[in-house]
Image 1 (tube, helix red, strand yellow):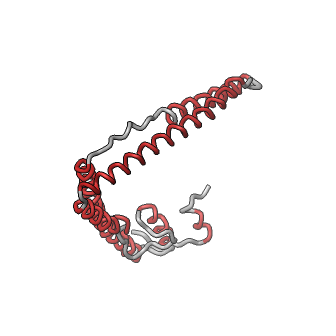
Image 2 (cartoon, one colour; image 1 turned 60 degrees about the vertical axis):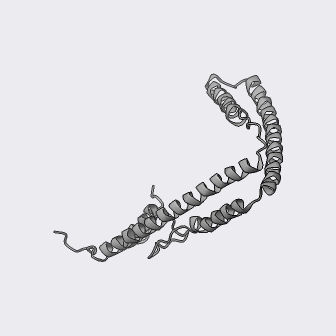
Image 3 (cartoon, rainbow, N blue to C red; image 1 turned 120 degrees about the horizontal axis):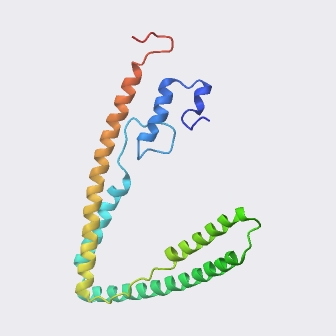
Length: 199
């Protein structure tokens, strides 16, 4: 059975086209079109995130203690509401899983060969109960204004540094990928044609 890469060989795909098609598997951050770009560009995500993180860091350092106390209280109320909503959703899901588990346990497989599917169904539900219904968010803490500023400063500082670091890695990768593509293209220009003798 042909793969997504070999399927078009039957239609007369050239060696260069085949090689460039396969090259798509080695180039990340590519566009979704079928063409391999001449130049790979770094992702915009990290570059766009740097000024956002800078702005957030700047805003938090300018915040007064009174503003921070208000923001800390708002954050606390939002976390309480999130925890309550999550607990309700988990209880609802647990009820649905439990009801299905009871149905599966009460089901009589039609033949001994069907016992394995019943066992599998039970394992799936029990695993889902453990994974989906076993977490409880820790209770939120109401921060002081100073604690809020320190927490957010640390958070935004990490976000800024991570974005800068990831952008630098993206730029380096884009440069290496561009060189890799160019070397591949150059090597394909000197490949022997069909019928040429290979020494």
